[in-house]
Length: 158
Image 1 (spheres, rainbow, N blue to C red):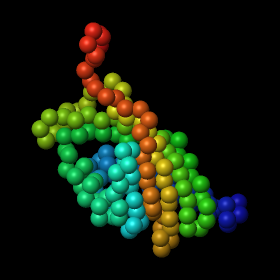
Image 2 (spheres, helix red, strand yellow):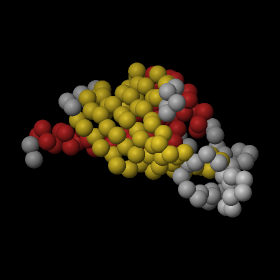
Image 3 (tube, rainbow, N blue to C red):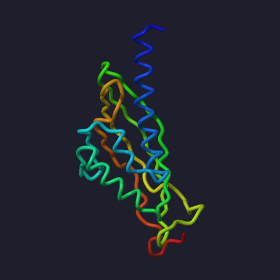
Image 4 (cartoon, rainbow, N blue to C red):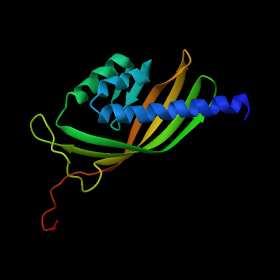
């Protein structure tokens, strides 16, 4: 394999690892660390269009998520595809299947009930190499499927 091919492969792997680390941090109670995966001017955009700009805003928002100890979640990441555009820039997509259960009080029961995922969507990402380390420059989440309620509709048997 050529040096260029090897560098491309290493960049793809580094970017994919950022996506997996993101999921691990939020699911393991270390959500505030997600900010460290982003560039200083990184942007995180939710499905409703709201954005967090910069590591400080991202850290603040995910610190609030980290404090939500009654939530048990698993962000299942799949179909990761990274395109390296240069030594400094790459983009990618990944599917997210999210299982989530909110307990009562400060804790969550284990195992949490899960008849199906809470939501499914796509991550759209831009990556930038900063001082030789790949970071997420932009992340946008598009919501495709959403479980609205646990309660069956009137007249429908569960």
